[in-house]
Each structure stands twice: as C-alpha cells, then as structure tokens.
Amino acid sequence: MSVKKEQAEKHRIYYCTFTCHKWLNLFEITKLHDHIYAWFDLMERQYRNQILGYVIMPNHLHLLLFVNEQSKTINQLIGNGKRFMPYYIHRNPVSGKWNLAESVIDYPHSSARFYETGEHSTYQVTAYSEAGVYEN
Image 1 (cartoon, rainbow, N blue to C red):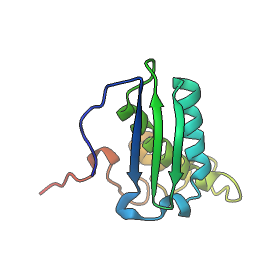
Image 2: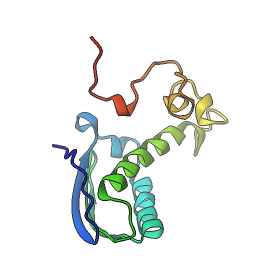
Image 3: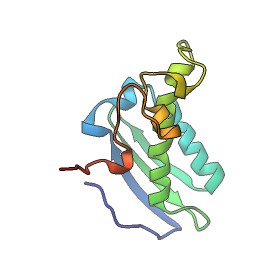
C-alpha cells in the first residue's frame, strides 16, 4: 500500500518498495535494470545520498537508502525515480537496435508525445497524475 504522507525527515535511512502497475514484469520486459542503476547514480552524485542495499525484481524494487540533510525528501526522490524510468521506456524506439524514429515524440505507437507536448499520439492515454481518477 502506498503512503501518501510527506516524509520530510532527512539524515535517515529509508526502506522503500515500489511495484509495477498490476504487478506486471515491466522491469524485466523493458530491461530497465541499467536505468534503475542510473537513477541510483543520480541520487548519489546529485543529492549525496547513499544506496545501502537494493533488490530489483521483475515487477518490483526494494531499496535501502540513506537520505542526507541536503537532499530532496524521500517522497521527491521516489517520485523522480518513477518519472525517470518511463523516460527510458519512451526512448526505446529511438535507441539501440530499433531507431524507428528521429525523436521520441515522432514515434506514433508511444505515449512520449503526450508527456513531452501534451498532444496525444495514436492512442489517448491518461496522465500518470490522474491515475485512479474517473469521470462519470
């Protein structure tokens, strides 16, 4: 269950777990491991936090993280990580062996255009900030 309360305390060790939508094996399917490690590097370099332990499973992540006094809050760090990972999912069609478009917003079978420009591509998605909100 997610905790919606702001955790503002710093100079503490936090144990965090987050899961993929509907427990789908998205970390494995998208080969997201290297991008999670890049997020770890960002938290250590930019915010001077320390990764004390982790486990990346196919559909969830456990993290033991020391958050220092100069860092963003744990809520902001986890939120940034969750946004950081979809960024790399959207890069998949334009990198590596695929190179299906010049830019992520040009690939028609992706939600990248919506998150970059606010315009929908082939399929209209719900913004992650509106997840769970339904209109009558």
